[in-house]
Length: 259
Ligand SMILES: [Zn+2]
View: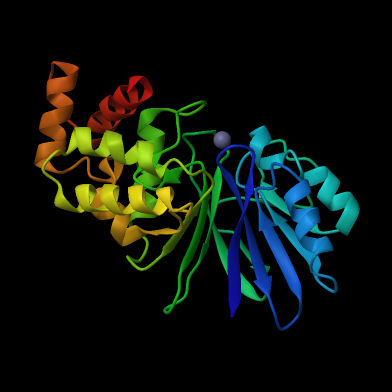
């Protein structure tokens, strides 16, 4: 059984640390800063960092990679299409990698950046998704490099994963995302309920992740662009008809940018 903990970094990043107690090996996803991982390793003698998984090239995801590689000799896995420091394994869509005895399938998810990848572990009991800055709890990443059409397509692929999939994204943006989700869908009870739950959780200092695909399908407006009420709200906002789901998505994304 792999245990997964969040190591907080910067103001709102989480470095996900996967731990295999049997082998005392661990892996980290998107270490923008090496310090929290090195501190964890110091306080857990006998543990070895074997793998560093990278989703995309932004500094808050790769800033600690070179130092961790140097300190631990861990293998660095990252997207083939982006410049990743000390990368050992270049990954593209459909590739499979073994990490701590788990098979992860790579899904290319362009939009936030053009070479962005996600790591998916298929498991009947506990499917896992590490999706970087593509799918957030109740939101999605900004379009820095890709188009709205690309991001919509990428999110559709993630939305099609099993409902029980645990979603490990990289930022604690959930509450502000839910404020926007409520503006898009004021009558969505699942969204209001989640907003109240996350508000309480954050007041108590808890973290709102991981999410699940089921919860995102129910509350994330960016995965709900085919809902009539979401389209109507997007049309109202844009002052015109959004004839395709991708255009509804584009309208929501630019609305959120100014929200
Ligand atoms: Zn990013």
